[in-house]
Image (cartoon, rainbow, N blue to C red; front, side):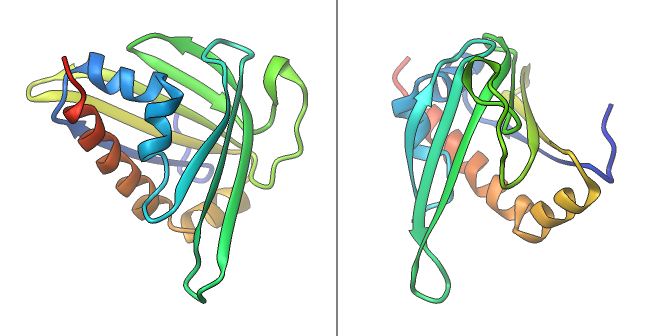
Amino acid sequence: MSDERFDLEISRVMKAPRAKVWRAFADPAHLAQWWCPRPWVTAVKAFELRPGGAFHTHMTGPLPDGTQGESDNPGCFLEVVPLERVVGTSALLGDWRPATPWLAMTSVFTFSDVEGGTLVHARAMHATAEGCAKHKEMGFEAGWGVMLAQWEAFAAALPA
């Protein structure tokens, strides 16, 4: 159940069939193409799409002051139901090893068929209300919104 003090949520109907949306997520080479808002780029350092599997992205890009920024995000997949649901967390590393994340969060992505495409719903669940507020202030809605739009465009362009 969602709790607005700790959770941020965003949804998008992607004009692509669920199989393509899933493929764009489940292939790390594909995921690297859309995972963070451009002009930032993503390096996928680990992607073991199974419960307990490692998930690690490293993003780099320009900051407003002209310097180079980076965001290192190791984590762990908790649940994987192909074409339906992926749950991951930054609180654990691969094989359930405890982590000390800069932002403790569990993410839940669900996929369902709707008229015109695929509904993707994303929820970011935070350990604290302060962490949730920090993520919101960092631009969760805009950043994840751009990511979802890039994901949609990438998935739609994949061959059948």
